[in-house]
Image (cartoon, rainbow, N blue to C red; front, side, top):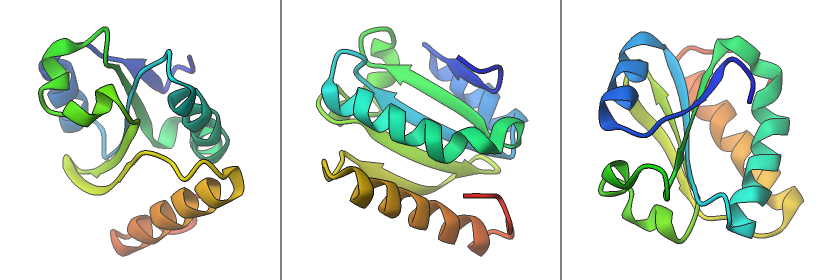
Length: 124
């Protein structure tokens, strides 16, 4: 896992990260699920070039039962969210299961919401 990414297990860890980082990308996943592995691969290619400009946070549903109360559908489908200055500004649940469509939808969604919040030329 890159140094700008972390797996968390408690609500306190998430709250601390949201306070300390301007841009936080959260993925709620089930590491055993094909959908989650598929989505993680797509996200790595989209977000990887951003490096330390964004904090990536992972919640595995088996490792963080306390947090799953906040993301109950995370048991079944991957959930991804973007937080800017502690506020959730973008969310997607599940995937389309078409790699080019998923890549395009995620990239476009993130690019637009980042622009709306004053983050231009992020490289997404």
